[in-house]
Structure formats: structure tokens, C-alpha cells
Length: 592
Image (cartoon, rainbow, N blue to C red; front, side):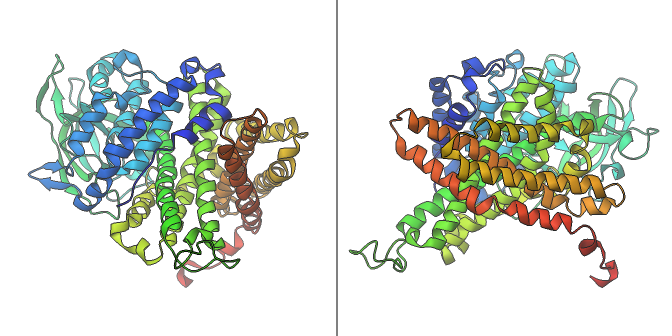
């Protein structure tokens, strides 16, 4: 059975050595002293490894069962959910006014990575509730906040987001779910939604559905979509639960992975709902939840890669196969461990360098969210908006690839369920699809985000890279191994952006055909920047006389691997982008 060990030391390194959170001027960061974050991460790590991880296989094998309209979650899930509630983990970074602990989002993200790595399907129940609560917090009336948020923060009630319908996914303007005004301020919501994660389950007293629907007579297409709060049980004025609403689960989807999460077909039959935000502005309100969810899904890609890597590394150290070509490494045994072989090391270093770089990238993004939400930093808001499709798309694509690489270390055993590697790959696969498929993330990046606000956010990113290289130009420890590769990769990214500027207007397909490559090119540059930042921090720790030189030397060696072996992919992506639209669009549809 696979295991999971919380990477608390590496999380602490990123938070304090790299991001220097305790000295940052964002409100609330002065409380993030190393001893405090260590205590939080250690406690969360224990829950992740001791409570959630053992249930991961249980959730995968048992799945969820629909019985008489109620979904039964896997054995042990309810007790674990109670522990999460009792520990206050469900609202770690939410406002105290409604029962949250008001810790910075960056710390909540660090904790979330551990929970997701230990048990992705389980963690989705509280993760979706967090997103739904955030949408109500941002767009709800004071009465709506008071009615729902205290119960949602504690996960006494959970939450969902309802977008997709059987005939429409990305193109939400085609939706048919309608909301008829009732004259008392409520609406009668009728329609069917599919792929609703945690849509029905037995771990909460109530489920608060956020449902996209159209009010009759409104504008056509996406401009006519509104967002509604539709509770499973109606809520009385005193906060107690009233009668069952007209919403039910018609089916649980049978899925490739995340079996422990109930993915439901939800039927709304004149269900009572209340408008959240403004009429016909539903996507604006829903995007509060979706943007948070996209960061969370990027985290899932990283998390599954981390747990898969941990187990592949242990296997590579223990499994005896063949002899090292340079001489026996285990002369007293019948063979050497797998880890002596260069291709196994390449495989493991691909995983390790991705996981550690992605962790820094994710937490950097979380820090920018704090700067925006807590500090009112508009530049940080613009930059994280630009990077959100990169975090979601690149980290989930690469995260899935790394679970496959981890599976490969096991050989045939990686294909056998009892070793657990299959589950990591299957669970990671969904992250490339939901919350906006990665092709859509790439289109969003190139079609919207690059030109947003006159392109100032992507220029700000280039300035960050340029200034880092300039400020550290005299650092001999970084120059050849980190700064030069980062400079070359950044030039590839700028060249790709210039190609879009010169060709995109006259031939939009030229830009869109290269969008997926651009997303990956951008992702590699981001991880290259993170590795340069981490290398600087590691070298400074070594120069200062750290008591743990092995950790920092390992960090430098891993970073050198990424810069030498992974970052050069930017040149390949640029070459593909510059080939334009013809290779992609010239073949007639009938000839495929």
C-alpha cells in the first residue's frame, strides 16, 4: 500500500527562505513566523499522512454509492471529515467574522497541497465548499452571508458549483436551466446539471448549490446567465433547516478516478433559489469561485506528482534489478537497486525537479493573491490573473506526466492496483479536464490574458525575470547554471509573444494554434525563475553556515538538473509556435 510523508521541510524552505513571508508587508504576514508555520504544517502533515492517506485506497476501491436519493461516502470518510471540522482546517484562511481563522491564503495553500496529496477525492468536499463560500463572501448580500457562511466555513454545510449541462460544457451560453421569478424574491430553478462534484453526500447536514441559470427574457447567450444559491434543504429565519428543496441527485458518474468524490447528475425541479450578485452577471460571480478553483486544481497536479514521486523513490531505492554499468554498488546482494541506473535517475529527477519547482510557483501565486486581497495590490492581482491559466494548465499537464513517470519506475508492478501508482495517475488525469480543460486555459492565456490592460502584466513578468538576472549578475554561483539558461528561456517567451503580436491580428489561427505550446513555454520559464530564486536562497544558506548543508546542496543539484534538462524545452515550443497555423489547419476536416 502506498504511503505519504508531508514535505513540511520543503514547504518551510519556500515560505521562509524564498518568499520570506514573515518579513513581507502584506497584512497578516507578520504572524507567519517560522515556528508558527512549522507548527501548523506539522499538525496538518500528521492529519494528511495518518488520517487522510490511509483512506485514499478505501475511497478508490469502495467509491460512492447512491441509495434512495442519498449518496453514501466510503468507509471512514465521515469520521475524517469530522476531524477536519473540529480542527478548524475547513476555514483556515477565511475571515473570522463568519468563523474562519483568517490566516493568509499562502498558508492555506501549503496545507491544501498536503491534504490533496494524501487524498484528493476527500479534500475536494471541503475545497469546493471553500470556493462556494468565497463566491458568497464576494457577491452575496449581508443577509446571505449571515445565513450561509458560518455553516459553510465550518463545513456543517458544504457547497458546490453547477455549470455544465449534458449539451454544453465550455460554451455556457447554450445552457437551458431556467430561473423563474416567484414574486417573493426567490426563483424557481429548473434544469439538469452534470459533473457536479460533491453534489450529494452524507457528510453534511445541508448542501448549498451555486447554480448558473437563465432568467426568461434576459439577453441571449452568456450575457443572459445569472447565478443562484439553491440549498438542498431550505433554511428557516432562525438558521434551522426546513423542508427539502426541489433538487435531487439522479445518478453518480462512474469515473476513471477520484472515486471517493461523488460526481453527480443534479436535477432541479422548480427548486427554490436566490439570486447571488446581479441579474445576468452570473459569470462574474462564478468566476470568483472558478479562479480560486483553477489555482486549487493546479495544486492537485503538483500534489499527485509529489505523492507518486515519494513512492517511486522508495521503490527505486529498495528494488534490486541489474548491476550498475560502472561496477557493483551492492556487492553483497544479488543485484543493485534501481536508483543506480542513469535512466531511473533521469526519471526521478524529472519528477523531483518538477515537484519542487511547481511548489514554489504555486506558493508564489498564492502570495500574490494575498497581496491583492489583503493588501489591495492591483499589480499583484493583474499578474496572478495572467498566471492562473499557466498554474492550472501547466502544473496539471506536467503533474499527470510525472505520475506516469513514477508508475514507470515500478515496471509491471506500476500497472498493478495494489501498488497504488495507477490511482495516482487516474486521480491526476481529471485535473487536466475540469475547471476549464487545459486547451481552454491556453486559449484564455493567449486570447485574453496576454493583451489584458494593454499587455502590462506580461511586461511586468518580463521585468521580474530581467531584474532578477540583472540584480544577481555578479553572483558566480548562479551565473552559468541558472542565470544564462533563464535568460535564454525568457528570450524564447518574448519571441513567442512577439510572433503573436505580428501575426495574431491578421491570422488569429496563427496565435491559437500555438497557444498550448505558449502555455507550456510560459510554465517552464516560471519554473526556471523559481529554480533560480531557490538556488539563490540555497546558496545564501550555505554561505551563512547552515546546520543542514545536505538539504541545500541537494536543492542546488536538483535546480541545475531542471535548468539543464527541462528548461531547454522552451526552444522546442517556440519553434512550434513560429510554424504558424498552416501545419495545424491545412488538413481538411473530412481528411482526418
